[in-house]
Image (tube, rainbow, N blue to C red):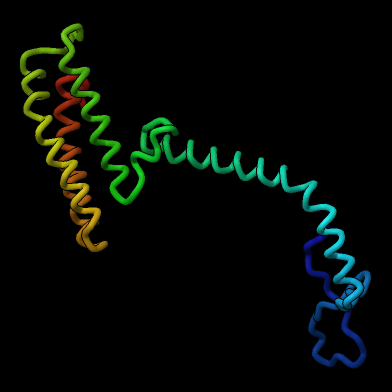
Length: 171
Protein backbone atom coordinates (compact mmCIF):
# COMPACT_ATOMS: atom_id res chain seq x y z
CA UNK A 1 0.00 0.00 0.00
CA UNK A 2 1.88 3.05 -1.21
CA UNK A 3 1.43 6.12 0.91
CA UNK A 4 3.95 8.26 -0.91
CA UNK A 5 2.72 11.29 -2.77
CA UNK A 6 3.12 10.95 -6.49
CA UNK A 7 4.12 13.95 -8.51
CA UNK A 8 2.60 14.67 -11.84
CA UNK A 9 4.56 16.06 -14.70
CA UNK A 10 3.83 19.67 -15.57
CA UNK A 11 1.44 20.12 -18.43
CA UNK A 12 1.67 22.67 -21.20
CA UNK A 13 -0.95 24.84 -19.54
CA UNK A 14 0.98 24.81 -16.23
CA UNK A 15 3.34 27.74 -16.52
CA UNK A 16 4.59 27.55 -12.93
CA UNK A 17 5.86 24.04 -13.29
CA UNK A 18 4.65 23.17 -9.82
CA UNK A 19 4.13 19.57 -8.94
CA UNK A 20 0.43 19.11 -8.27
CA UNK A 21 -0.76 15.76 -7.05
CA UNK A 22 -2.95 14.20 -9.69
CA UNK A 23 -5.31 11.35 -9.00
CA UNK A 24 -3.69 8.10 -9.96
CA UNK A 25 -5.23 4.70 -10.50
CA UNK A 26 -8.99 4.37 -10.28
CA UNK A 27 -11.03 7.48 -9.80
CA UNK A 28 -13.02 7.43 -6.60
CA UNK A 29 -16.70 6.77 -7.21
CA UNK A 30 -19.19 9.11 -5.58
CA UNK A 31 -21.20 7.78 -2.67
CA UNK A 32 -24.63 6.82 -3.86
CA UNK A 33 -27.54 5.29 -2.05
CA UNK A 34 -26.84 1.89 -3.59
CA UNK A 35 -23.15 1.98 -2.61
CA UNK A 36 -24.07 3.07 0.94
CA UNK A 37 -26.55 0.17 1.27
CA UNK A 38 -23.92 -2.25 -0.04
CA UNK A 39 -21.30 -1.00 2.46
CA UNK A 40 -23.79 -1.26 5.34
CA UNK A 41 -24.63 -4.82 4.26
CA UNK A 42 -20.95 -5.77 4.18
CA UNK A 43 -20.47 -4.15 7.58
CA UNK A 44 -23.38 -6.14 9.02
CA UNK A 45 -21.87 -9.35 7.72
CA UNK A 46 -18.27 -8.67 8.76
CA UNK A 47 -18.78 -6.96 12.13
CA UNK A 48 -19.97 -10.09 14.00
CA UNK A 49 -16.98 -11.98 12.65
CA UNK A 50 -14.44 -9.35 13.70
CA UNK A 51 -15.98 -8.27 17.03
CA UNK A 52 -14.53 -11.13 19.13
CA UNK A 53 -11.05 -10.48 17.77
CA UNK A 54 -11.36 -6.76 18.44
CA UNK A 55 -12.56 -7.47 21.99
CA UNK A 56 -9.68 -9.87 22.61
CA UNK A 57 -7.17 -7.33 21.29
CA UNK A 58 -8.65 -4.62 23.51
CA UNK A 59 -8.44 -6.92 26.54
CA UNK A 60 -4.79 -7.76 25.86
CA UNK A 61 -3.96 -4.07 25.39
CA UNK A 62 -5.69 -3.17 28.66
CA UNK A 63 -3.88 -5.94 30.56
CA UNK A 64 -0.52 -4.76 29.23
CA UNK A 65 -1.31 -1.15 30.15
CA UNK A 66 -2.31 -2.19 33.68
CA UNK A 67 0.87 -4.27 34.05
CA UNK A 68 2.95 -1.30 32.89
CA UNK A 69 1.27 1.08 35.37
CA UNK A 70 1.61 -1.48 38.19
CA UNK A 71 5.32 -1.97 37.50
CA UNK A 72 5.85 1.80 37.56
CA UNK A 73 4.21 1.95 41.00
CA UNK A 74 6.00 -1.17 42.21
CA UNK A 75 2.85 -3.10 43.03
CA UNK A 76 1.04 -6.14 41.64
CA UNK A 77 -1.52 -5.49 38.87
CA UNK A 78 -4.27 -6.76 41.19
CA UNK A 79 -3.44 -4.02 43.69
CA UNK A 80 -3.53 -1.25 41.11
CA UNK A 81 -7.04 -0.11 42.01
CA UNK A 82 -5.92 0.59 45.59
CA UNK A 83 -3.35 3.09 44.32
CA UNK A 84 -5.48 4.98 41.81
CA UNK A 85 -5.93 8.72 41.76
CA UNK A 86 -3.56 11.65 41.94
CA UNK A 87 -1.86 10.44 45.14
CA UNK A 88 -1.63 6.80 44.11
CA UNK A 89 2.13 6.80 43.60
CA UNK A 90 2.72 8.30 47.05
CA UNK A 91 0.33 5.81 48.66
CA UNK A 92 2.26 2.99 46.98
CA UNK A 93 5.57 4.36 48.28
CA UNK A 94 4.10 4.65 51.78
CA UNK A 95 2.86 1.05 51.77
CA UNK A 96 6.20 -0.27 50.48
CA UNK A 97 7.97 1.72 53.18
CA UNK A 98 5.68 0.17 55.82
CA UNK A 99 6.49 -3.31 54.47
CA UNK A 100 10.20 -2.54 54.66
CA UNK A 101 9.78 -1.40 58.27
CA UNK A 102 8.08 -4.72 59.06
CA UNK A 103 11.09 -6.57 57.67
CA UNK A 104 13.43 -4.28 59.58
CA UNK A 105 11.69 -5.10 62.85
CA UNK A 106 11.66 -8.86 62.28
CA UNK A 107 13.72 -10.69 64.88
CA UNK A 108 15.20 -13.17 62.40
CA UNK A 109 16.82 -10.47 60.25
CA UNK A 110 20.56 -9.92 60.61
CA UNK A 111 20.26 -6.13 60.38
CA UNK A 112 17.49 -5.87 63.03
CA UNK A 113 19.51 -3.92 65.59
CA UNK A 114 18.06 -1.94 68.48
CA UNK A 115 18.61 1.31 66.56
CA UNK A 116 16.82 -0.13 63.52
CA UNK A 117 13.88 -1.26 65.64
CA UNK A 118 13.69 2.17 67.28
CA UNK A 119 13.74 3.78 63.84
CA UNK A 120 10.88 1.54 62.71
CA UNK A 121 8.80 2.32 65.81
CA UNK A 122 9.47 6.07 65.48
CA UNK A 123 8.78 6.12 61.74
CA UNK A 124 5.39 4.37 61.75
CA UNK A 125 3.47 7.38 63.13
CA UNK A 126 5.24 9.60 60.61
CA UNK A 127 4.10 7.32 57.77
CA UNK A 128 0.53 7.50 59.07
CA UNK A 129 0.76 11.31 59.13
CA UNK A 130 2.11 11.34 55.57
CA UNK A 131 -0.73 9.07 54.40
CA UNK A 132 -3.25 11.49 55.91
CA UNK A 133 -1.43 14.38 54.22
CA UNK A 134 -1.63 12.64 50.84
CA UNK A 135 -5.37 12.06 51.25
CA UNK A 136 -5.87 15.68 52.29
CA UNK A 137 -3.81 16.96 49.36
CA UNK A 138 -6.02 15.04 46.92
CA UNK A 139 -8.79 17.55 47.65
CA UNK A 140 -6.61 20.62 47.04
CA UNK A 141 -6.41 22.68 43.87
CA UNK A 142 -3.82 21.40 41.38
CA UNK A 143 -1.01 23.85 42.18
CA UNK A 144 -1.27 23.38 45.95
CA UNK A 145 -1.60 19.61 45.50
CA UNK A 146 1.62 19.46 43.45
CA UNK A 147 3.44 21.51 46.10
CA UNK A 148 2.15 19.24 48.87
CA UNK A 149 3.10 16.12 46.91
CA UNK A 150 6.62 17.45 46.36
CA UNK A 151 7.11 18.07 50.08
CA UNK A 152 5.65 14.66 50.98
CA UNK A 153 7.94 13.04 48.40
CA UNK A 154 10.96 14.86 49.83
CA UNK A 155 10.08 13.62 53.32
CA UNK A 156 9.72 10.08 52.00
CA UNK A 157 13.09 10.40 50.28
CA UNK A 158 14.72 11.31 53.61
CA UNK A 159 13.02 8.41 55.39
CA UNK A 160 14.05 5.97 52.64
CA UNK A 161 17.70 7.06 52.87
CA UNK A 162 17.65 6.42 56.62
CA UNK A 163 15.91 3.08 56.11
CA UNK A 164 18.52 2.01 53.58
CA UNK A 165 21.26 2.96 56.02
CA UNK A 166 19.65 0.74 58.67
CA UNK A 167 19.36 -2.08 56.13
CA UNK A 168 23.08 -1.83 55.44
CA UNK A 169 22.85 -0.27 51.99
CA UNK A 170 25.33 2.55 51.65
CA UNK A 171 24.51 5.16 49.02
